[in-house]
Length: 338
Ligand code: TXA
Ligand code: MG
Image 1 (tube, protein in one colour):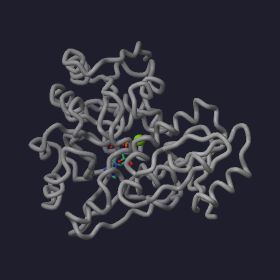
Image 2 (image 1 turned 120 degrees about the horizontal axis):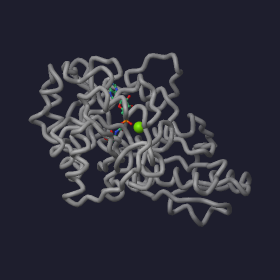
Image 3 (image 1 turned 90 degrees about the horizontal axis):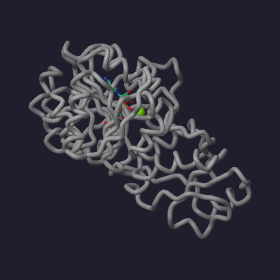
Image 4 (image 1 turned 30 degrees about the horizontal axis):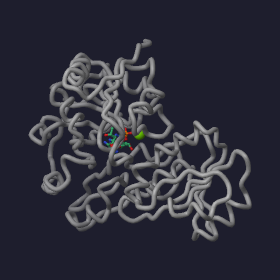
């Protein structure tokens, strides 16, 4: 089906309209604090399969289910470990997704055949209000076409989803800029499946032991079994070839200044500008800024027609691990160590 995609505001009447569309089983683009989501009623199989269609997403990649209130948690999941409540107390509402045992009310199309489901309560006011007014739990993957960088503005969603969904709610640009941290529970500890704004260091403060999924910093082959199916896919990719360069700014600038041509760009820290002769975009100096700008600049490279992008490797501490993880996947794990 082809839609005339409406761009809605965050005004009350538009939020109510979005909530009505969702209650009626439609797919709507919504803002969250991390990235924009492509939302639909998580308990409605047809609505959820329309998310997969709109995104062109592989059927074996499960969706995150968004709630507006902790009181609703046990309607959708069972056997919630005590430590999950401790994490909820500290980090919800916020950019943390917990993988828990699903109840039958969540259909297998939402969990991609798994007996578990990822749950999160976003802190974004408009997102929570839309969920609350719809009266539904909302399944929502990032609102990009599968394989392209996650959207951090309503315009990004519009560019990818025009004609594919009835409406997008504009909530401004996303404050965090990378997707939520995803964790699962293992024995008395937790496992980090996807790094995000809630960092490994913060999780360790609450949980002590945090295991790592291999896919965070290493390539995983298509046939390998991984705990987070999303980790299998090349992701977050602009059209340009992305290469991560590890080294100090002298080594980095030597390398890119020698290798630059008309279609080559660098992605550098703000403080690197003076060293670079060719074309570049910057993504800030702190990990928080880099997280916020990363997907935005990856989309900008497409608009500029970049063919090759050399990236100054970010720190992998705190939210930096999420930035590094997304870049590794955008680069198809192509890293040059100088
Ligand atoms: O910040 C976010 O999480 C955004 C916003 C819209 O909330 N959503 C998002 O969804 O990033 P998506 O579908 O693009 O990524 C979901 C990730 C995938 O890597 C998926 O494999 C993992 O979560 N995941 C979901 N359910 C899971 C489950 N039951 N077991 C393991 N991993 C799961
Ligand atoms: Mg995604």
